[in-house]
Length: 265
Ligand SMILES: [Zn+2]
Image (cartoon, helix red, strand yellow):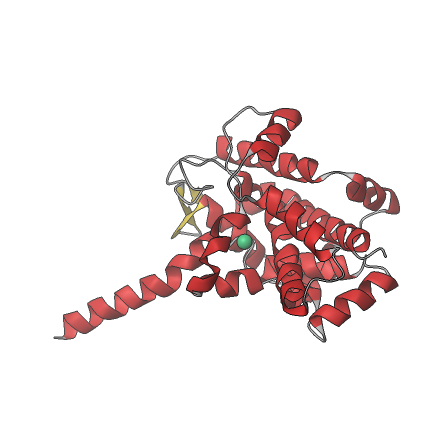
């Protein structure tokens, strides 16, 4: 009897735990991107955003796309969080591939949502959904393992240990490296939100395919540096924290620029 209860409990835990594995930047990572973006949003865009989100901040809107994963009505959003690629693609071949991809991937969905949000006649509930999704997906496209390989589900299949706990490469990058810094999203934002005006200008000028290609190149580097079942700890953080912070910062700065562009009239 007892073991049946335990089995049931284990099963329930597994159900609760399973979606977390494919979440993309965990809660904190997405909130950091949203919080940074709000520092780069101009007054006009901020006004439009407030009309859509009310008192909800960009940071707090960022996790909606993961919250709704439990709702069957939103199952169609499943593939919107990522794209998979073969090795050795340059910027142009990667861009061509994403442009031609007829499945709904993160690249064509960011483009779609951005153009929908420019439509003044779109109804408010759609606008709210799309804005929340946009904040999330601009974060995701900056997470290197969201531009990963199909055969290992963006690193979910690369089993590693994180401070002796079983984990995988995707999860380390979604959550565990960020959690290791032991900062709230507002503290984290204060620590990394120091782009120079030249960096802001350059990053906001980069097109969507550059954002994706940077993550893709980073993912290939991360793949090449890992051994299956490797025990990651202090050194992995030391070697990768700079890349992690750069991806979060660029995501936030670019999201701010994109929102200014979307809400420019
Ligand atoms: Zn996601």
